[in-house]
Image (cartoon, rainbow, N blue to C red):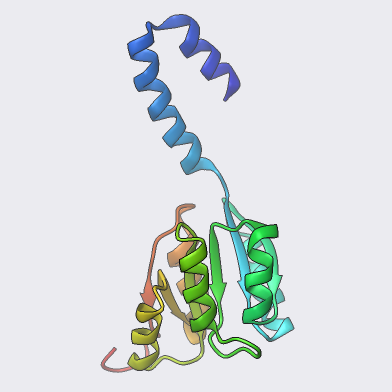
Length: 165
């Protein structure tokens, strides 16, 4: 990347350099790995999700949190782009933690990952300003939809087998 920047600065006039540099900065940003913080109170589930995400291109798991208080504490240290958040956790639930994250770090994306697939939970996720919603029963396909192409894609996914949703 540094070679390309040097080439641009020595080959083109200043006006053209600005245009190319803007485009190049956007390209560089899109190629940067998505930094993910996984929040769930079940250790085995956190490990499964973290291991699965580590196999995806352009995804880096920067931390794990065991509850809603822990996820807020780890936000500064881990500096994630995306938080994958369970709803039912001790000390602070995922909806409350999502609200706090969106207030303090508005650029961070929060995707709710839960076993609750009722419309009421999706509505509460929207109210909490979540950027996505994945049912754990369709977790793999939901994660592929969100992270699969190397760029964050918001999704409010429900299982295919649930009628009327």
